[in-house]
Amino acid sequence: MDAIFLMNNVWIVVCTVLVLFMQAGFILLEAGSTRMKNAGHIAGKTVFTIGIVSLVFWIAGYGLIYGEGNTFIGFSNFFYSDAFAMGEALAGSVDFFFQLAFAAIAMTIAFGGFAERAKLSAYVIFAVLFSVMVYPVIAHWIWGGGWLAEHGKQDFAGSTVVHLTGAMAALAATIILKPRIGKYNKDGTSNDIAGHNQVFTALGVLILWVGWFGFNAGSTFGVADAFFGYVALNTQLAAGAGAVGAMLVVWATTGKADVPTTLNGALAGLVAITASCAFVEPWAAVFIGLIGGIIVFFSMRFFDKKKIDDPIFALSVHGTVGVWGTLSNGLFATPELATVGQAGLFYGGGFEQLGVQLLGVVTCGLYAFVVAFIILKLMEKVMGGIRVTEEEEIMGLDLSEHGGYGYPEYLSTPTTKTGA
Image (cartoon, rainbow, N blue to C red; front, side, top):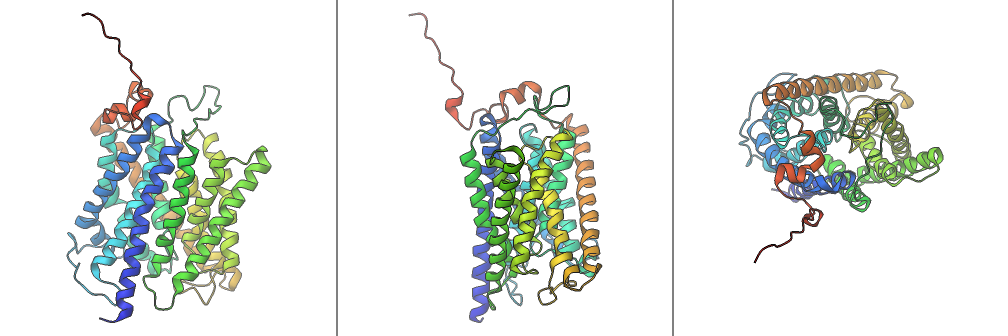
């Protein structure tokens, strides 16, 4: 067992921990972006979701992605049993651990569409079904040797596999659950339901930003040529450009440098570069992140005008920008870096790679949305509804679903003692 093999495995375990710690970022981001009465619920459901995905990924998810099968799905290695296997670059257990963390992130993104109005039981059931019927299928198509991999689809760390997939499931949930009480008026105008803590939101974004280096740089799966440093550089540049782009466009449009938009711009830059971080030059990473930050602002406005209530902005940050990030490979991938597929349009590759990227976006997006929509509709019929009652929503999910507030002092019920 040589030193490089050991270093590869240490590196990927560290990166996996970073990706798992991104869930802490999601807790703060989502809790801060929603109301105080739902903060404990959001934190709790994130933790138990990781537990559900971990077990389901061990039982079936990994095998559906990487097991022997056909170009559509894998059919072997259920109840993952290759933990002691030694691959060319990684131990089996390390590879499994890393892939599991990605599956958990996709699930968390999908749950953005459930925020502040879904029953706890809906989270539990959908987590199981999404982890078997949605995420593994798309991951197999692109990362598991499936039909899109055969076409040369470029998605280095998951703009499509993780972000677009999660966002399309979130879109299905948002449509079925319908807007939160008080979000839209009868005349079609929108009310701003502000999150309760912008500091939490900002800290959550920063944690996600740092964790993203495990997400992107870890997808090199090794340390031998130190290429992970190049991937990390592109990731940092895109995130910074996304934050600046979003802040400038909202400032120019509204006259105010809106904080939530700036924060979502940073995330947009990260999502946008995730597919191409290993395939493009640094100047292109800046451009990709900058456009991602601008796109997210207009996308947030678009969905709001369409009365699609997206409290966490998952559809814009992970969906719309996930599409842009995926397509950007077809424009900016260089011949030297395109180890998968072809060079992009601006590097002499013509429209071939752009066409493959577009094919991947359309088929993966449609599959994730349609299957998630069907699952949720069936759940709605079987469960008699997946949304809490109006009374429970007004009360807050902390109290109605868990029996206590995330901020206990929020429930102020002074009592008066009478009698002897």
